[in-house]
Image 1 (cartoon, rainbow, N blue to C red):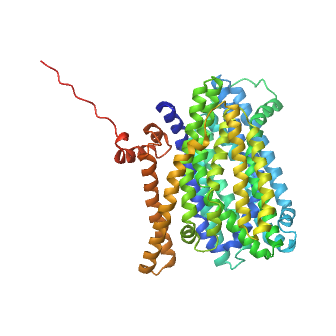
Image 2 (cartoon, one colour; image 1 turned 90 degrees about the vertical axis):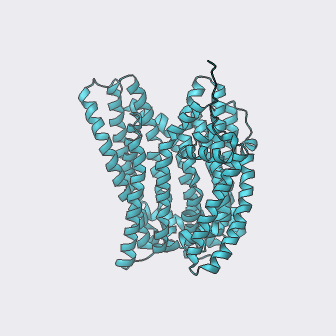
Image 3 (cartoon, rainbow, N blue to C red; image 1 turned 45 degrees about the horizontal axis):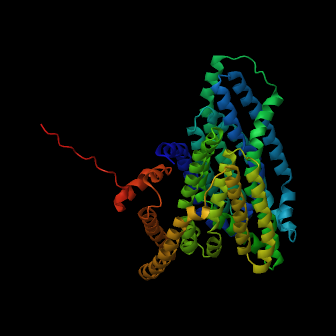
Amino acid sequence: MSRTDSSSLARGASLYVVCVALAKVLGLVWIIPVTALIGGAGLGIYSNAYSVYNILQQLATSGFPLAMGKLVSERRATDDRAVVEHIYRVTMRSLLVFSVIAFLLMWFGAPLFAHLISFKNPKASLAQNVPSIHAVSLMLLVIPAMSGLRGYLQGFQLLAAPAYSQTVEQLFRVIAMVVGAYLVVNRLGMSKSIDGAAAATFGGFVGGVAGLILLIAAVRPIRRAERAYGYEESPFRDGEILRMVYRLAIPVSLGGLVVPIANLVDSWTVTNLLQTVGQTFQEATTNYGILTRQAMYLVQLPMAFAYAIGVAVLPTVSSAKARRDQAKVQESIVFTLRSMFLISFPTAAVLLVLSRPINESIFGASAGWSIISTVSFMSIFSSLELISTYILQGLGKMYRPVRNMFIGVAVKTLFNFVLILALHSVIGAALATTIGYLFSSALNIMAVKKYGQAHFSVRRIMLPFLVASLFLVMFLFVVNLLLHMGLTSLLGEKRLVYVLQFLIASGLGAIVYLFLIIRSGTLRKEELRSVPGVGRYLVKFGQRINRNQRPTQPTRTRHRR
């Protein structure tokens, strides 16, 4: 990929990288104090409530920003202000109706959802899960409106407010979760797991209100300016506008449904299967909470980077496909895969080797580190699935990745039954999830090659990153062992030992990995520069360790008199 194209891709992704990364960090921060307040069982209840909510939330939010942004942008390009206004009003009205229906469905359906979580002990499940399901259902009154406003702003190519709203929403959510759980558990003396989980879940509604207020403040001056122009009546009927929106939004929303459906499958199968193999309801709920809110959350962190790259590569591939520029399609696909492997492979290595210090330093408990190690490789396949989905959508194949992802969910569900019953452990569910992502990402890559008419080898693209990561695994194993032995003898505080162990080992590991990648010449200077957010720092690092990366000095020519 040329320097100009790569820089354009990086500029389009940088804002999303920063804001989504901040949101992810904030989303990780809450786990530390909330876990201490409500415990593993409380996390399991929290996860059960969100597994139901996420399906309804994805229906309203995943496709509408893209659909509104595309339609508004196209109509603004032709100065068709009446249609832009019509799109805004019809879409926001439909989202309002959906919000009310979804809220009522979740609020009054809470007993049914709770009953499905545990067939063996339905009374305990009702008592534990209904309050949290009621709390999370309130978010459905604000989140759909946020998605519509984000899409409207994206149509005006104003990306700052949509990006910042993610960080603001997450910040207020974390504060409300921690404060709410603390007040309920420590001040009011209510149930640690049941009431504490409900209070933490309610924090999502507080964050949603904060994000909505920011978006309304950003949209108001635009709406005021648009009305000042005046416009004729739209030539379209409401139904025609809705068809335009839904034609674009439905395939994206269906794709966004896959992860929530997979989570719901886990919510309904893991707890029931763990009880079948002999665990109590409380033990099964605790193990489910460790799987979903500790291990899975850490594994999903590199997907923030994959999401940022995917958002930027979709229009690039779409434009190249429309121009029948096959070379540009090929370059975009290869560059995207290389960028994704650059991040996902070392992340998997760190989670594999440093799972114990990560778990002890963040969550303050030893339970769960083996699950984190088990799902470490999932970060590679889940990122690959996400990236390839965006590429296929850029190629105009909106439904193919949806089909492939649902096949992955079916495979995962099958292996949930096989592996949990065989291993008698929640690790079976962790392995099943990784296998499901492996299937869906492999199907996506085959589809990219077919419909993009691209000729590339995933094995060859990933091989340099795999080799560097294998060296990283060995390095981390030795450093981790030496640090643990040395720090344990010097320091008495167990958690402090693990924190220092994780920070020092991961920091040294990052330097070693980058050194191996850059020194081997795997990434050129143009590719390093185009990595969103940190590109220029990688170039400077490369210039220090590799002469081939250093800028050439202009030669001076002597002129004779």
